Amino acid sequence: MESPTSAEAPTEYDSVGRDLSIWERLTQRKVPDAAQKDRLKRCLSVFDLINSGISVMIGAGIFVITPVLTADTTGPAIIISYFIAGIASLFGALPYAELAARFMGVGSAYQYTYYVLGEFAASTIGISNLIEGMIGLAGIMKSLSVYVDALAFNGTINSWESVHLELGVNYMAKYIDVFALLLLILCGVLNLSGVKQTVIVSAICNVVVIITLLLIGTVGIWKGSSQNWYNVTDPDDSTKSGFTPYGIQGILTGASLAYFSYNGFDCIASLGCEAKRPNRDMPIGIIVSFGAVMALYIFVCVGITSVAPFYTLSENAAMANAFAATPWMTIIVSLGAVLATATGSFSGLMVTSRVMYSMGEDGILFRSLTAVNKLTKVPWVSILVSMILPSLGILLLDIEELVQMNSGGLLICFCLTNMCVIVGRYQEPRTSIKETETTATEKVSIILCLTFWSISILSWVVVHEVGASLTGISMFAAISILGFVTIFILQYKLVETTTTNTTFRCPFSPWIPAIGIYINSGLMVALPLMTWIRVLACLFIGQLCYCIYGLNHSNLTLQKRSNSEATEYIRLTDHFTTESDTDHLIN
Image (cartoon, rainbow, N blue to C red; front, side):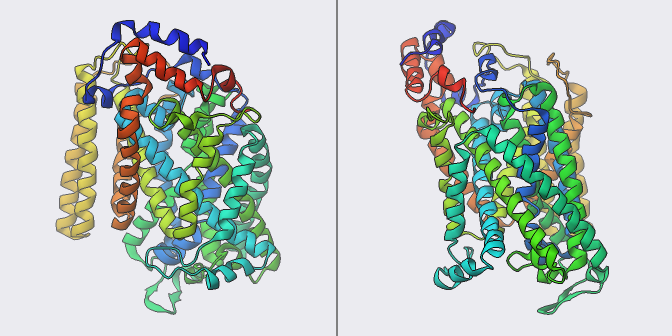
């Protein structure tokens, strides 16, 4: 089956028909495709974008990990952890907003990195996005199973599973959660109906969820007591008491894990191709949804830690059980949790499948991922594949392990996105892949950014290993200052070359993106070693797929080879999806 795209593609690359070195393939960059902007149906308003971001962030955060972090990592100081994570996320929201405006809503963090840093960096961040999305979805589904069971079945399903499906293996789930797996399958079936329908349902649910969160904060403060902040001790461990029972390290670790809760930026970015006015609506959607969710998180944390001692929040459905003395609130909280996690699961699967679809369309991953259902016009193969890893996570890992893995992928994603904003300011705009030359200014900006990121990680490793002693703080300060010197050099010795006009530019660049990288590096170091082993293992598997397939079959590589070979592989894409199909990919 031949499409107009297939027939016309070779003519642009007649003068580029040659094979490429490994280095050229790893560093080649994609040019924003004007046709891609209109390939999907533009049906989402700014309200739809805000709603989708809030759906993912609330569904992924407040009902899933807040009770777990409060009980096991931070204590009542979860309030401070969420504030720190929110500030760190702000330094990610502003760069995301600039990239969304600059590229007119075409793509996601994966696409932005492909435009600015090249194919290898794009494959890394794309795989990180997939890890973050799929692992996060697994965490949401496990939480959803707990609240649905508590609300509809009085906890009998999870009780049966804990007895008959117990695993008893360290670093794994206590039992196999088959009920969560069934809910994931249901989520996948519903996700095939199309994005607009899902967004409408999410909007209705979000109204109920926001009212529920406001009630949790209000009733918690009204019924609670400050004694649960300062005059409380864990009966099983008398060393854990007061507002910060786990100390400063607990607060920082909690902040790195709470980062998972602000995972909504890429959801909005991934829907840019379906936004009606992406250059205006994308920045608004990102910043408004972030601000609303941060305020809700802190308000709810104040309420929940006031109404219940921190050590009681480790139980299943802990958010609802905290209001056991107020039965009507228990029902409301359970209902809100079900709706929040349900909408979060729909949005999370939708976004993950779209990132996977984009990577397949670019040839970074297998092209079969771009298959589109002729009836529903959704990428059904990507949706099904996006359910495989969450299925394993649901069956084998507990919520805390899932949250830690998700945060690792998210932190890598945010650091590279912030780098894109800095480097992008020193790049000449490209209109064709023939423009392959990298300027000296651009090379220096990349080197300085990588140097700053490395120094930032080193500074946090020093303070983490040496401790908060005078020596540790002195070494930390000295190394940090050295890192920011590189940003000073970048700002005052290099001249911005981009002439791209956007409706939003990140203020105080390169300092805002650099601070974002610096804070994210600290949160990366705060994550447990076992988390990074798992994340790096997933990245290795993903990069192995890229090296086996994408390195030789990406669109850019094929287009720069001989015209006949490019035509052959481009036509392979048309076997799965044609331009006429993708005009209505999401109805």
